Length: 246
Length: 177
Image (cartoon, rainbow over all chains, first blue to last red; front, side):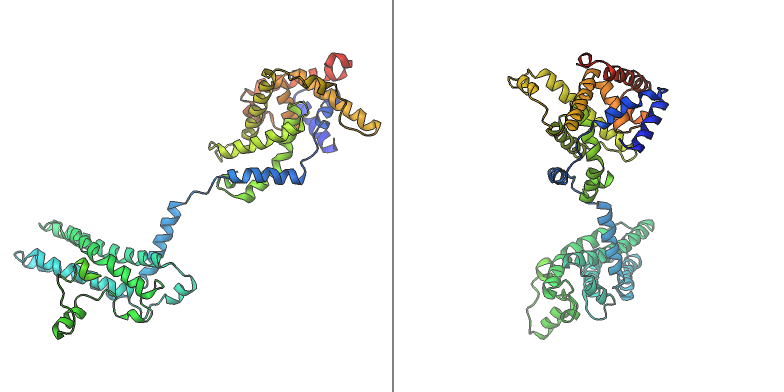
């Protein structure tokens, strides 16, 4: 029993209003102690406990924040032309419908949807002049992360613009169809383009050299030009159908 | 403890390093000086600590730890009482103290045996209260939390238990048995 123990025990007895002559008795209680754990006992105990350590749960909030951060980083890759171009195409479609209510909505959608998909692909996966390319080399991301992040930016932005315009249309007596149709159009046009894009790049950075031409460029110019020249296969269906887009 | 519950192995090592010895002492004194059994219960205490998902960071850790330990000790003592004495138990009791060596060690061992005998006569609750207060240095409030009794009960057990401890330790040897 050390002096520190003795002092502690004295205080404990005093706290209870017990006489100091009990100190010797409680000292005996404290002195009756086992041998301290040996290092090998501690190691054995830790070995037995470690498998029962709770496994850290994935922090979904942090994962989401990371994904959003990645998307924001990717947003800096897109040039101003993408943002304004997408908005302009949709604005033009809405303008057409507002100006000419009798115009076929299907025709407007058939023009606007694939054009938006084309512009998104061209802007999101082109290779020349990527300002954050060095950053991506220094902090590599997986092809899947890169694709998801860019798709998130492009689809998110175009959907948001579509929703705004749809709301405007609804306010002026139109019907809320544009955003839904855009999403459908994206769903049909994107996956095959993204797959092809990643496959061509092999690194998830499709636009480094070879894909300065948009990888999903089946519509409209190359195929149209090929058909015009008669040197390529004619599109068997609408160019933005899944078979044509891949 | 929060880090341990998040799966941090280093935090577990620190937790074990800090509490293994005191827990071993607690079980040793509660279980009549059976060190091997005390070791097992120390491990069981830590295992329960890891398996339970009831830890709240705002709650004081020590009372929670010793609540688990006190319950384990209580369960063990009850199970031991319920178990019929085996044929070898009486023979074991007749064996001389295993601590060999010079006379001084023999005297120390005899004194230790006496403390163990005295503690055994005190009853589980009083014994746990005395051990937690004097040997493990828990505050009255922490003991009340760990044993789930009012603080007044802790005080009365301490007063009565300490006086009884003195009576038994100073009594002739036969009385303590």
